[in-house]
Image 1 (tube, rainbow, N blue to C red):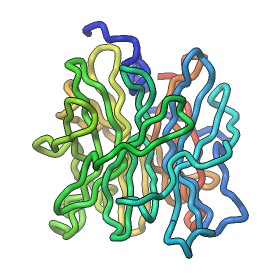
Image 2 (image 1 turned 45 degrees about the horizontal axis):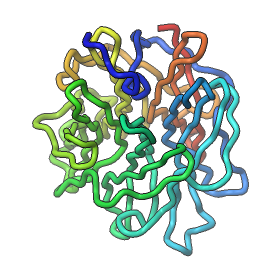
Image 3 (image 1 turned 180 degrees about the vertical axis):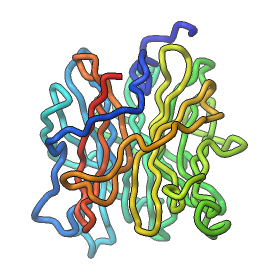
Length: 318
């Protein structure tokens, strides 16, 4: 594999494949805020801070107390020195805002930029509740300022759950879900897929031809989405993604591999199944980091079958 500049190792790069065998951790990573109803913390994204200064997690927090303002929720953060113990940080990282995100911001994706600082891609819903992808910039990973324009919007579909990788040729590839406004069919034929878009500068994206991950099995007949993509040391790619079925409505995490980031082969079986404390109905929105001891940790959102969502984790030795 071609030698990469140092900054690229900070964004979706792992020297080894974390694999498809994960053991669920017992502790809750980010618990619900009991004073709020509905109780929802969702869509984790974790970055390693410079100089081994710990980790920062960005995630969606429901804001039911702001319903009269037309706001459903926003992106907040938590800090951990070791990837195990997390403390919620005060303040809001990216709030609901006009234009294009008056209702909520969610599904954060933070990348390190070659010129320094960070860019956060995120899913946004405005007054029309149309899902699209926006971005903000931060010099310190805490204070964020909206970048002008829309990163990606689809004419006849909703897009969201972004993940963005720097490529060796200087371009950026963004993975996201694409859900047509009018389903193309029933079940696995509904067209709820994972697609990709390409950009020369990380700001202006064009959708690439084809579909990266299609609905292909009964456990995916509601949707596939939330691709977490890793570039590996041998130049290949590993993806973890969520697959939901609709009868009953359940979500699980699956995995796939690729040699070029475009053509994917799904692994057999389920990578992370439902079951266990607080996760009887859905597990989805995976995010992977490497721990100081060399193991890998997956953070994910989990639903207990009611309206409570928490952020949990699982660990792999690779």
